[in-house]
Image (cartoon, rainbow, N blue to C red; front, side, top):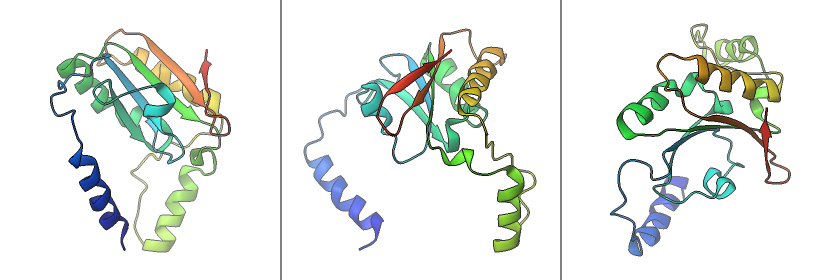
Length: 162
């Protein structure tokens, strides 16, 4: 069975007892979380979030550059007034460079990806600090509290980066 078929079956069970159809559109805790897409990070469980609490924006590495459009929409149209950034240990973004992935794409599928910044990093702590700074300095982002964390995939803990 394909994974999509498994999802359909799981969703039928979920929908059968679904009771949260009346949640409001704006996130109740007025926070946007930018986190890595890594499957080992369950953002809601790690941060104690329920449906309707927060906007969770996920991408490879949890990079803010990739999430700016969503952050602006979250703030301007849906009222979020805090931003949390979550990167994590053992991140795949620590394992390559733009040149490595561009060469792989060129070699394996004969396409040119030189126009894409894949946003890898070599220093986990610095990546969080850089993203916090990017948010704070971006003129399109409101002046709101911004906090950066490293999620430890080994322990499930978040560690504040200052």
